[in-house]
Length: 148
Length: 218
Length: 145
Image (cartoon, rainbow over all chains, first blue to last red; front, top):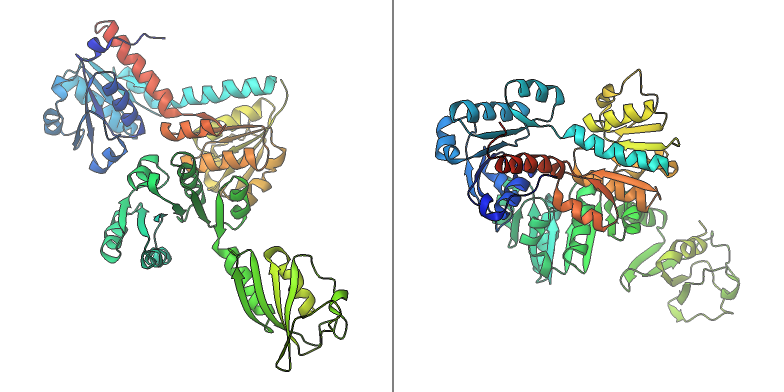
């Protein structure tokens, strides 16, 4: 387990999240709750309706590949960029823009396809590929059922 | 009382109107933004745009204060989850699902959710009407648990000319009145029933069909 | 290790992956999916189970998969409500001993834990991976790139 930094430390960090998916909303909710400044960007304004009412976060609707949009949304002030849309390619492209154009210090991308995740890693993008972890969670439990 | 209806379409619109006319407060939850706008213009109800199986949307629709939640979307899973949430998270006294697949009526009931299948209800009503021309009235009473019917006895009634006591009737069925030549008779065990008699039959719902079958000779 | 009778609902990436693996390990597997084309993801070499095409939220389809004999049911369609309903029906109505549902929405996952269902939430799993990366970067003072 990686220990969670203290609230004071977290409060000094800005997290920029693209894609208000259930994952994006989950990350935003918890990181904001732990003290981070959170900015959320999604192409569709209606996506923000899945956020809790009390969430302290800036919500901006716009294209995550439009440099002006990213700048206005405050990507330059963010230590962390988390790309969490449903589209692997969009997340990869957003991550590359954040890294190469804006020099964001830490960029992490959700990539669901394991093959793509591997090739994006070669481009220098840190990826989170959850489907194999989900499958592993199922298999671990199934094995224990079969051993009963 | 406050009623929340989840779903859309014409029949739901009329259902909502009916509740309104009876003086109830109605909230409609619908996923389709365009339909929400249309509903808001047509009906004096609160319209909430969103997924009725989402806790936040139910909360926004005021589920905490609702007496009834009726889930009537075209998706049985969505209806089940909406009712489950209404019951467990918001303690709504009555959560009713309108199921699409008739098989799911009994399944939902086993899961503790009130379920109504339009297909089953309509089919059974048509069946009762179609097979029983001689049955002139079908009045559900006592919350639908009791049925009152008027039946004219024909040649196919196999206990004609024999006393009421001999008829092998289900326990929960009763012949309350016999109308013969304009005279009204309250039957006793030794009263004979004849072809042409009109009888008033009172039954609990479960025994209704069997009792009717005996009287009509089906 | 005993051989299980496993019913898998949803032949997407996760469902087909588990079906291929479990079939190869010698478990008896039935896969249910609405779209016949999805069965193409089942491997002709490793998958020796059965395919049932249909909507698993219709009890008739579950019966066709002989759900009452199943040791384990896994729901892995893309719709949370379908996964939850089928899991609940399998457990409560057909008495399947082990039932696991994939559920994307964490708030729904909580409710179904309360109802006694085992769930796996990809959102929480991916979330943990992201949190770990963020925390490690902060603690390491920017060592992670």
